[in-house]
Image (cartoon, rainbow, N blue to C red; front, side):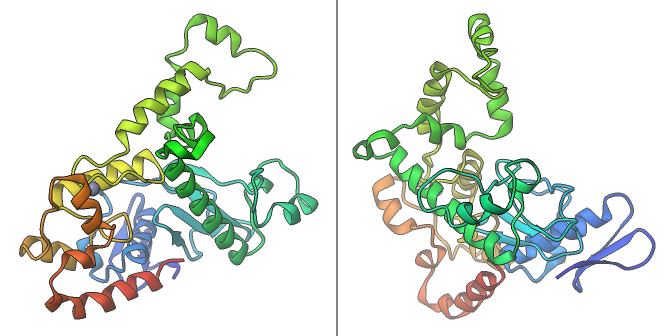
Amino acid sequence: MPVRQVGQDCYQWGNQKVYCGTDAKRKAILQGIAIENTGWKEAEEIDVTTPSFPFPLPNEFNETRDFYIHEGYLLISADSVGKYRIWDLDNGGFLGWNIISKGNPVKTEYEDKYSLTHPEVEQFDTLSDARTYAKWRADRRIKAVEDFFNPDSGHGYLSTMTAMALASPAKRGMLKMKMTNTEIRDGRHPNRGQDWIPNRIQKEWAKEISKKLPCPTCGKKVFVSLSAAERHHFYCEKYGSQPQNQLYFTPFEVVLIQEGITKRLPNTPKEAEMIHSSNILYLLGGVTLGILIPLFLDSRANKV
Ligand SMILES: [Zn+2]
């Protein structure tokens, strides 16, 4: 559903709240994303100006087109020339289709047609291509993080490549600042790109993130990024659970939590993992199930 202008300097998503003045269009879009992502209908309750976890929206998107969320963190929409792009909300960057990895669903076709330069390498011809690719990347990331924690997974175990992929751009910047003068000099080698970070620091980071990802409340440890993990930690500690969409609670869920219908999770990670299963339905009594299921189906229908 597009955001439309409703008077001078005023914008609205669907039939929801009208925003006026500075940044009005952006707020209306963010509200649309929040609603599509969560299935929230009572939009007035979403304070898009001060979310617990704000996400930036890149200028490349054509703000009048539909936005889709895949797995709670990959935002898909059309750009100004009508091509589709995938924005990683947690890592703050567009996904390129050029990843060299087994099973890449578009690479062969795209590299015959397009160059590896920006923005072509980030553009998809159709929404369907973008969705297929987003799903492949999301599944691949989950597998990498599972391997990261699995001592039997060979090279995947505590892999520095996975660790670096889980770091936000800000975190990568902080890691670069840990480089010694010798390492900075080594980094100027022509074979090394601007983003080169010595193995020593990557290994330290892998160790650090292996401790930071697991949830102190419930023990869940497979997250698609450190940001996603921190978001989960926050909700899990505060409310004892996190809804399936991975981002926000719906107002209905907040009521259930306030009424004490959803219970805090037990403290031992083993028990918690069984009950948690990232599915709030397990936490609820039978009485509320009938009401909740349509709400979940509805919020899923709004997702990619
Ligand atoms: Zn948790």
